[in-house]
Length: 141
Image 1 (cartoon, rainbow, N blue to C red):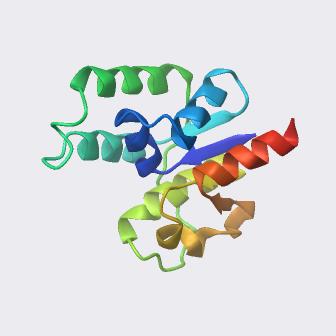
Image 2 (cartoon, rainbow, N blue to C red):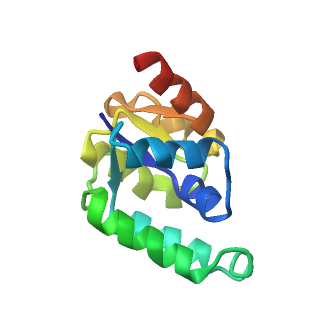
Image 3 (tube, rainbow, N blue to C red):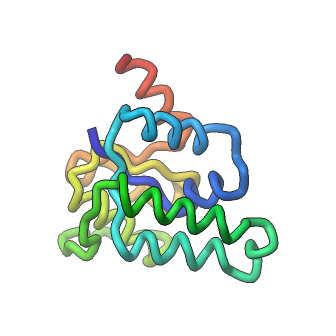
């Protein structure tokens, strides 16, 4: 199974979340699923992590470590595939949906369901919260 994580899930991990986002990363590290990432998604993760609002809360070495881990272990896609034509609350989220579609992800995991609701069901993707995804993983085991 392949999943795509929205930027906000990665940022939660970088902020030290011990909840759902951290659990998801632990499951990924243990090989429970493949994690799809694209260059546009990685660029957004880094930009948000180093934004003025968050720069004092996230250590640069942790961002670098995440980038290096993703470069080595993630399933990489281009992230520019056309074909998603629904309106999203935040048009910048289109690249996350495109990454999920291009990778054939079963799930797109986000901390902001309202912004990605329009993508639910497109290409067989389920848009779920981190907690919902962990529940799905638990049921599958």
